[in-house]
Image 1: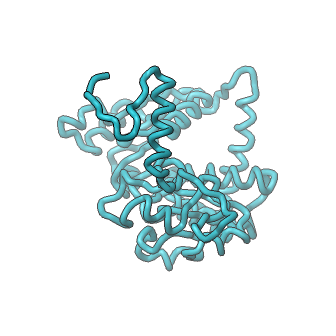
Image 2 (image 1 turned 180 degrees about the vertical axis):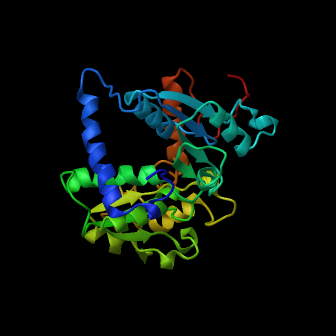
Image 3 (image 1 turned 135 degrees about the vertical axis):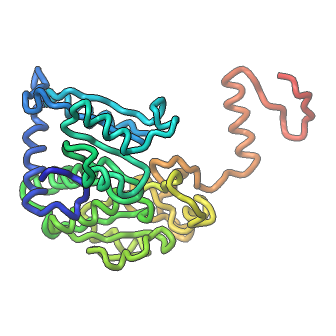
Length: 312
């Protein structure tokens, strides 16, 4: 395997080999010296055109632990602001002798374009391209499920995985569906109709609009946040409205509806997006809470109906 661009290109034997290798390398973190000479003398470039914290740092840490030389490229502060294209950047990296490029780009297909061009001759790893795929995240998810549910051995044959949320804009969901199917798992997507992509019926998975019906048979549940940064239209009226419809909880184990008297309630409907979608408290309760907070900081709000001067 020269490039890692999509989980659709990964066979079961290749996926299991990657997961087995990752399990062995995970033991390096427990050593006094967290270094291996595997990539000594190689240059790895983290080419990130989108903001990232965990993914970029994870790739940098992994490359350094394998003794590679790491170059971090960020779109902010680069010549992209002066009109430099992906081709120009790739040719520059090729001239510097890059052996591998980890690319994250806002355009779907950017990783494929880079890998199938003659701009760069090194290996290309897709760290997320638009709403297309994120294969390394899917491999990490599969590694986690196999480690917790299968003791880190074998495939995921017969495992029931439920993926819930904004599937339409989720590159992680796409990669997970194909990889989990390759590893033998049964996948169910749960989302409102407007948050499912066109052609999802051709994917190797089941579709459901009822989280309560999908949860009982699930071995693992994956919750996807609402990805506002990739939306270009109104796919639902508001985060509050979708919370009222299904009230996805950050724990992900059941949907709390108003008629379920004993169902857990939450003010955080989509974990990771920090949308406050719970029921608002009555005005009097909110004001009382605000007064308590203000008194804690030495400033009390005027009582209800009292005139204000605007001075603090």
